[in-house]
Length: 143
Image (cartoon, rainbow, N blue to C red):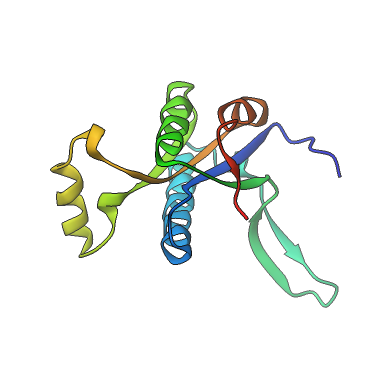
C-alpha cells in the first residue's frame, strides 16, 4: 500500500508515561483534535469512513488517515507541539495538570501553572505528512 494521503495525525507521548495514563491522554487529545477540526468546518479532512464486513455489519467513523503514535522525552514532546502550532497545524495537548481530581480542579491547576512549568504528557497534531515527518525526527515509534 502506498502512502498517497497528503495528511496524517501524529500523536507524541512522554515515554515515561504508564500505559493507562498514555491511553487516557490519547483519548482526550484525539477527541479534542476532532472537535477543533469540526469547529472549523473541516471534519471531512479527517476522512472518516464506515467499514463494512461481508456480513453487512458496519464499523462506523474510522479515519482513512495514518495515525502515528510516537514517544520521546518530555522536552521533545513539548518542542513537537510548539513547532506544530508555529506551523499553523491543528494541535491538542494533554498536560500533567489535567489529571487527578475533578475537571474543575484540573482547570484551576492549569490556570495556576505557568507555561514553562507545565509538563506535556502528549501532543496530537493534524497536518501535512511531509511537514510532520520533519517535526518528528527526535521521536520514535511507540512500541
